[in-house]
Structure formats: structure tokens, C-alpha cells
Length: 360
Image 1: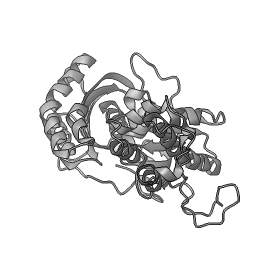
Image 2: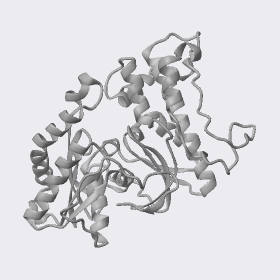
Image 3: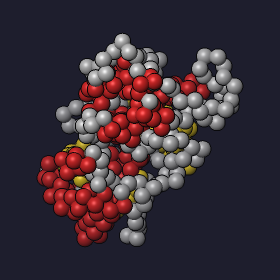
Image 4: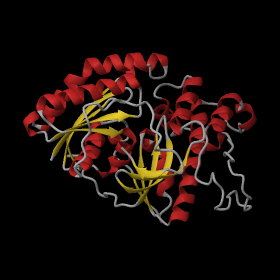
């Protein structure tokens, strides 16, 4: 079954064709980074206008690279939530119109399920060596989300922990913007950090628990924030209190700042993830989202040999149509379709801590 997936939740216009929910036949991504770089952040109006301009040629290219026409497509999937409303509506409306005109089934996809599914895909020139098996721990980290969850199926997610304020990717972007390091912030900080020393600053780890401290920096399992993360404190420390945490033995260079900030940001995620692995007994961890491309996160998790850590290829960490097509296949395989009245939503409530239910 060949599924055409369309992704337009933020500033990437993307389309892909995936066969049987696994094999990527094409994956076209048109990035808008040059159009937002001057603002050091995504401008929603510019994003939606570019989607309108690019959506048709991107879909045509995806079909051409897959060697297919619409006759060879068995279903069309598109992101409907969460994301920027204007951007979402462009891709969703295009996908519904194309499905209706071509007489194909249509399915609306939760963008976040797509990121978790990315590691289940195989590219033509880079076959996956490890395909995750359910259940596993999911680490969903991006500019808008930092979530640790138990994943029992592609749409059966139990959120164990989440950010109580800023997401990891947002903190990377805002620190990079403040120090004028470049855009996108996460990519720039990762690159600079390779030539810096993480010992240049000793940024504090967040303390969210109300439970009794065990003496080793951990807390007992009854703590309601055991798996939650926070990045507002780290962001404040790096931007407004740098003198307080800087090691005077090190030169204050962009490389050292990036390395020290990134080290603490990644430790925050990994420490909570290790708690979840210990408590649940799950040893397979699957990461997804833009921050899953971070080299230090990958290296730090690789140090834990007792865990089976699976990351998507770098190209599948950012927004892409292949992950949407993959989830769309799973829905259609089960007989799910979406009504023509389906509309976009900027937010989803099902990815809040404590919720465990099927996600659409």
C-alpha cells in the first residue's frame, strides 16, 4: 500500500511516498530557513504563504521521485495538529482536496505521532538496522515539546513526563538568538559545542520535586515530577546570570558557552529518561523530533550500554512527510479514515502528563 504523506505544520513544506508503512520511496522537504533567518524564528504569515506557493510542486516531485502517479497511491495522509494554524490549513486543505478529486481515502495525522514513528521507517539508500518493537519508552523532543512516554502502539501513548515550562528546542533557539549565534539555534549550538568545553560553566539542574531527597540528587518514586523537565531556569541562567555560573578559568567564547549550555540541557533529558527506564523496566528508547538530531544527546545515551537507544536518521528528525505517511498507513490498515470536515488544531490535549489513550 503506497501512502502519500503531506507535512506543513510549521516551516517545512514536505511530501513523501511510503510503502507499507516502512519503505520510503520518496521524501521531499522544502525548507524555509532562509526566509525566517533574518527574524531568528519562524514568522507564521511568511510560513503559510510559502506553503501555499510550494505545496503543489513539492507533492509533484514526491510522486515523480517515487516513480508513481496518483493511480499508484492508495491513500493520502496530512498533518492536522498541532502546529501553526495557517501552515496546517494549507497542507490539510490541499490533501483533502487531492484525496476527494482522486477518489482516495484520506487520514488526518497527529504530527507528534509522526515523530515517534520516524524510527520505524527505512530509506532506500540507508536501510534501518534496528526497527523498534512495542512497547518502548519514547523521547519526543522538539521546539514545542519535551515528552517522555510509554509507547504501546503507534497511537497508544501514555505520557509519563513533560516540560513544565519551556521545551528543550525552544531553550536552544532562545539562547542562540540572545547571543546572536545563528539560526536555527539547535543546529548552531550543536556545531559550536564540538569545539568548546562543557566545563566552562556550571549551570544548575532543575529541582522540581516536592518529595524527600534521597541524598544522591534523586527523589523517591512517589514524586509527581519524577519524569518532568524544565528549561526556563537553564535559559535564564545562560542569558541573565552567566557571570554567576561561568568558570573563570575558561575564555568566554561562543564555543564554550554552547558546549556548557548543551551539556546541561541534555543531562536534564537523560536523567529523567533513565528514571523512567528504571521504573518501567523498559530498556528500548526511541527518540524523535528535531532535538533527537543533537549529537551530544545521542552520545550521552550511547554511554548507557544497558539501553537499546534507537534514533531516526538525521533527515527524519526534522519535519518530513515520510513520518506522516507511515502513521497514515497504520491508520488506514486498521480501517480508519477521516471526514472531509476534518480541520486543523494548533494544540493537542492528549499529550499531557497522566493521559493514556488512543491518539488521533
